Structures are given as structure tokens and as C-alpha cells.
Length: 150
Image 1 (tube, helix red, strand yellow):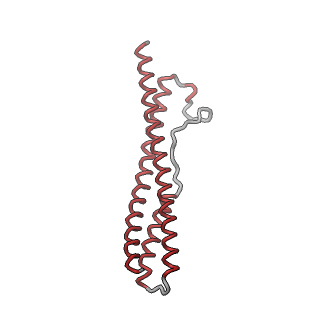
Image 2: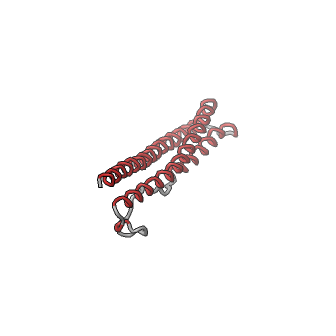
Image 3: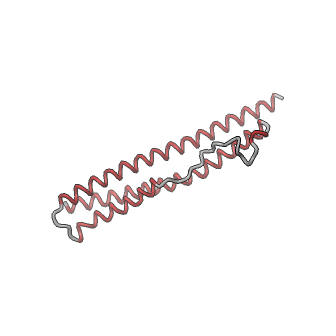
């Protein structure tokens, strides 16, 4: 009996730890969205200032704008809403019959659900993070070029 209680307690700890990892990823995603929003606002301000202070737009002066547009596109991809799996289970409308499971089996299933959510979400977050980094690099190149044309 004590061995069973120890196993259940261990599974509870694992479920809580894995749920914490999923929550961490979701918070990181929100932070990345906030950063992308700030960079978009900065780009719009810079482009507006640049266009207002450039009296004649010629071919070469459009090059920084092209870089900003590409960066803007990547940042919009970052902000694109992706479906995230939170690992939260609807115990009443579930195909796995969570409510009828014994505590040990339920904890093992929840652990599996949270781990699957973490794996899927980490891939989504990695893709968003790569797009954000590319957008920042392109933004910096556009900003450097902009300084040459002002």
C-alpha cells in the first residue's frame, strides 16, 4: 500500500512539474509576442519618420524600406495566432474517460497529455523564436542602411 502511495505521489510531482514546463512555454510565447509588437511599432515609427523627411524617394532610398517590409512580414508571422495545447483536460467531454480511471492511471495519462502539449508547444515556440531573430537581423540591416540614406 505504501509503495502504491509513493508511486501516486511521484506521479503527482511529475504531473505538476510537466504542467509547469507547459505554463513556462506559454508565458515565453506571450513575451515573444510582446517583443514582436514593440518592434513592429518601432518600425512603423521609423518608416513614417523616414518617409516624412525624405523629399525625393529614389530607387536606392527604397532599399531600407524593403528590409523593413520583410522584417514586418516576419514579425507578423510571429504574431500569427497558433494553436497551443495547454494540456488542460475537459473531464466531462473526454474521449479517454478520465473520470473512470484509477488515480495512478489518471496521473500517468495526465503526465502523457502534458508532455505531448510541451513537445508540440516547444516546436511552435522554436519556430516563432527563429522568425523573431531573423526579423530582428533584417530590421538591423535596414536600420543601418537607413542611416546611410538620411
